Image (cartoon, rainbow, N blue to C red; front, side, top):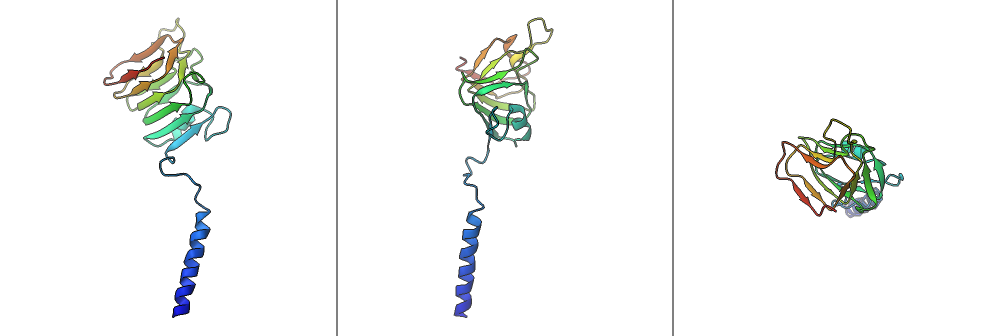
Length: 163
């Protein structure tokens, strides 16, 4: 009987050491972060793909670079740029650079947001177009847009440290 106990303990210890190698080292706090790097050194190369795949309440960390895209947020998400000077959302003079839909709620910080639709457009193209409540826009450089921030049917939004 005693030999069986030793045998079981040895097997359990070996199993523990075997499965330790399967753990990738990401702590629970870091596991809800998706990384974006335009150079291809992260999970995604563009912001919209990261938003589309991310579950609700995830954080998307964006490394410095120029991201030429029009972004739609339709869920609760945090989007953090590495640096407001070097992390750029560029709308290519077409539509809103960043659109937060009625289903979206976002915390956005650390970006330069520029080049929404052109002045000749009949639309209300903006650097940030917000259609929902309780968004936080902090520490961004919002410039060279038809409208910097456009809100409609929204309330309780917080805008601070706009550079």
